[in-house]
Image (cartoon, rainbow, N blue to C red; front, side, top):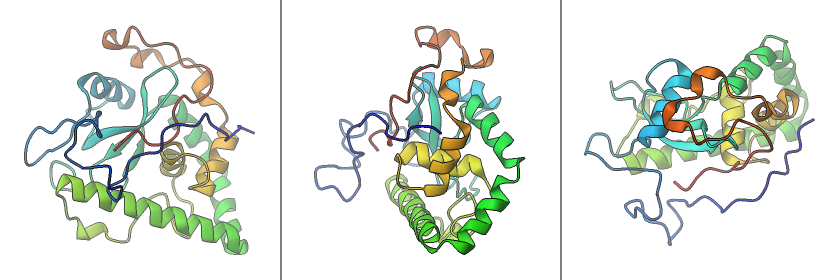
Length: 229
């Protein structure tokens, strides 16, 4: 089982934090305002790495939410409305190829159905999973406010099957990595099962010239809570 006691990081700033202002660049170093319609974008190097990880141009990615110890993005935060106007409920999107592969393997094992049954039989697990659902929606709503996006089409919708089913391990693990242990109990359990995927070297296609100074994936997670919003 994977040790979920990650090295501590600075707490993520939050829109409700009086010391944090959405327009203060020192409070949001990873975000760049570029226009009224698209206020935040990934750093160009991060965007190039994510494109290589996914094999396509990322849609609506605005921030790195979790990084692998090698420095590459592993989870990105996605705008609630994509550039083409499509509502997009999956705020935390898993990009690390090793993590994606591990989640797909777990999904094919029947684990999701077993966890859904556990949710129906374990009130405490169901309560904590419901809390993760509400946390997910709150994070997306806060991001929408900062981006000037109102997306009523997905109001009350989170991701991964929450609050009462397990339908996508990728989404649940992404939230667990971005928020840290103790937020999504199913995502935490998934991480414990898939193990230390960050110890496997990055797949060759993500080793870009722009990232030549980055180390191979190894060691324990260097950052497990959201980077400053």
